[in-house]
Length: 440
Image (cartoon, rainbow, N blue to C red; front, top):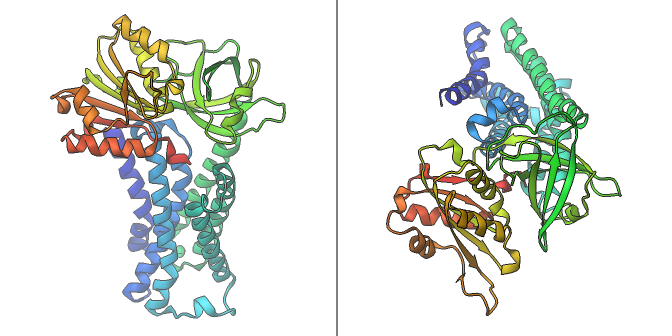
């Protein structure tokens, strides 16, 4: 915990550092309060943009303390905040005495034109980020444009602030700006170019492709010859880029690791056909290769050793991280008590049905499986409908607040389940969620 607090403190300190340096060593111009606030907004906005590359860089010394899903959300909202600061900058300058000619005049210095270009690109980036689904842009296409626009915006912001800011007669600020520029560029190049190149030189190899249901496949990978799979916790996920040839698409996607960490020689992901790329997952063959980068996430029961009475709530393919945990419990002969509420549309959609029955019969962990079908056939004798508050209360009993809950599935199901648990006065600390929609 103290490391997470230290990282947050360092982050805030870096954002505020140009204000501190300017206050201590900067020249006093006698500007209005609004004008000074406008300058301060620009300085903080630049620092936020510089640190965006670090937040998105998948560095485990950061992600292990917060969880990658939380970190990416923080990256998104801080990016929007930084952009708002930068957009407010010229407005406050104009209101503070600089005049509106900054916006309308063509007879301005080159660094003012740079600022206008930054504002234009910032607006374009915001529109694409917030409305890419309405424009029917695939996530990969949006990310491609984002990865082009973001460094351009940052570089132009650096040029404008460095040459337009009167505070930059201060040597410490000059050094800080140079360091932040170098840091942002270095991290971006490493994350987008160097690391993928290094990983591609040590590809994993597909050793098995198993069809689990009509639209779900498990792909098993082996590490490079002479190596072991990277360490991971049950319930974590990784990023995979399949290289299959045969005119099949090459895209990076995040998938849960469905295997147990006890399997040291192979690592598996169970993937459902949900989009254009995953529709081709069944065409993956043994011998194909994949670039693998992992593992990430904090959705794992092993991080909460004090929890001994667990409730797993899964919807559809959301079973995969929970299956990894159950397999690990089985391998380690765990005596933890687990209730699994598993929702699907039909019997044909149930993944790992036979294996779940075997784990349940084995007694390690002490597992009870309840299948809930929303569109069952007449021959179905089990639970029907959806996993709502009534079913949670029915199968969990009276001691709801004494259990820990692990939820994974469609976002709507997760939101409804969390609401139900809070209605039962279950503490937030006892509710664990992994939401994969954060990247889409």
